[in-house]
Image (spheres, one colour):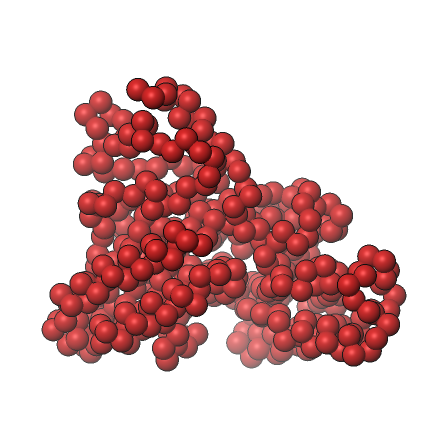
Length: 393
């Protein structure tokens, strides 16, 4: 044996503890706005009914999550300031600001804080994406919700326009000529157009849909994956194709063909409902993110006679490079598949695509019945294409 099991375990842990390969997402917000619940209910599988028992965040907490793109989410306290970061601001790929829709009496203060932080971050790294989760939307009526949503966007834009840019220390932002009105106008236009607003709630799929936009914004390979999905959709005579992260239920990519928000929410709801029963499927691998504190569960067929998992420790790579799901994948693994007829003429079909990914296809029932073999044949090429993209990114 090349090395002991304990040595292999230490090497594996060192790779998991190396965060340099993870995309970092900074989550900010007012006190009790719901920052922690936005993270834990999606990426750690905490039930929404436990949200009222979350304590107030006292210090920065880092949550690792492994998917098509390994990420690290930084949950921050309400009194957070940029100088509290242990790493440079430009190491983050996205900033998510959570605003409590119920607290209309503190909108202005919360938005003002967001704008001040956002401008400073943007001047350091203009490539960072900004998202605002207008949270706890379920507590308001539809009409009042719409009014507040519009008011928050309007107030944010006004604060960006009214910000005293010339008062910022020029030596700290030497790459910008903050005395030049054209430069300031460019900054204002970029910020106003770049913010992505989402109404969210832990009690429905809107939160997962919002996180979909965040994760997709950080995927360099997204255009290539979307192109593959569009090609698969066309050759399979399907209507829409969605690539999901299984554990979180977040959409990672779509073919963007006649896509609407209502359709995305419908498909996300379907996947969430179906995966609630996934333990009934014999061949499903549940690979949990290390932050969940749960061990992997494997089927009987995946276990050696002596009770150890079927992975050969001798074959483990000796280098310290982070490993992807394709490094440990069994090529003969049988993945789950399922189809549901939503209406007489519409069918949703699902395939577990990799240990972390699921492919959901929306198509006409008659197409599914007539072309299932062709669709599953096309699936093998789509899957290989995604593997090739991930292996070179």
